[in-house]
Length: 125
View 1 (cartoon, rainbow, N blue to C red):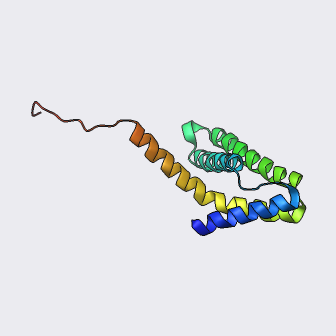
View 2 (tube, rainbow, N blue to C red):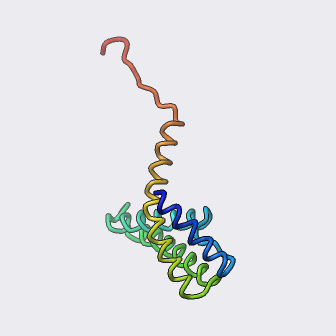
View 3 (cartoon, rainbow, N blue to C red):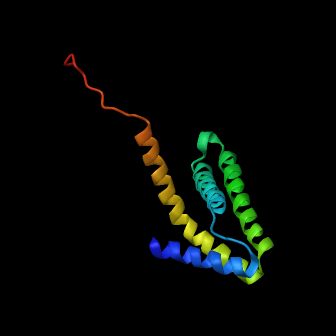
């Protein structure tokens, strides 16, 4: 994880010198994570015929795909094509495990904040 973080810092400094653009930001991670979650959920909803209509899942899948394409287009708009291609590829690869770890951390934080307590039966039934 430390090596990935150092790579992202190095790549951001390189692209900032080249085109005054950072590839790895909180903003870009949020959009990539949203696109990954939407594509995953949409695919599984369409495949399982969720509520009897695969169109629901296809719409969510295409929304996720649209977000993904807009992010890549944004990279190409701000930098040279070769740098944009390398940065988009790096984002696409590195943001997948970060999204999974982020979702796990989110669920752990929600569970910790929910105040779930064990329930005891005192009357013996």
